[in-house]
Image 1 (tube, rainbow, N blue to C red):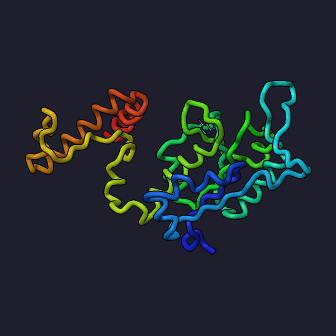
Image 2 (cartoon, rainbow, N blue to C red):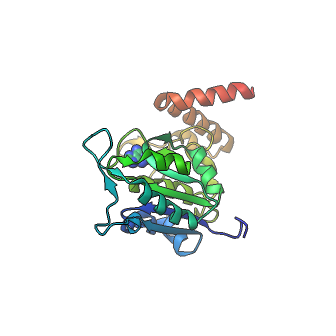
Length: 241
Ligand code: ADE
């Protein structure tokens, strides 16, 4: 079967399958899930434990306070998650990973789906990451208590890019990061609120001037708030000139 006819699938290996779909069962993602525009599969890592206590973790070699998820158990769970979407990239969510950005989200959304391993405790045995060639991905420079909230973030970011999920697809072209810039400020009625007026240009009806103003705002906001994004944008722009 080609990827065209298969629905985009998120397959998640987790110790807490009840956390899914969670917030993804609501709003746009939830409607799209109910409509069959994407599919969610969960695998309970504990089902792959082999002892009668259903042990999934053990103490770290070399010592340390935290427990480590066992490679044999995790590997079997990842294999089961992969079986749900065999051609999709396998991601291990961890604060050590490469920072997730909109470019990677776009790539994942354009493919058959994503297989996700959620860690708990201190992490998973390094050998299973190596053996399975897992792509380590972080959603930010902070530490969560487990990969599950990060998985929800990653899946949400992908699903909203799938065809037919966001009603107005034009809004996708204009949102933050579409051009490597942050979005311009938005206003709606009333025209004056608590002594604050909407910028004059936006009520001028002059579409070209509005477009230019918005673009200036995008550049200004990006320059002020995110010098890292600004440098990349400026380099790309210079390369094009
Ligand atoms: N697990 C714990 N912290 C994380 C983070 N920042 N990103 C992805 N997965 C995580």
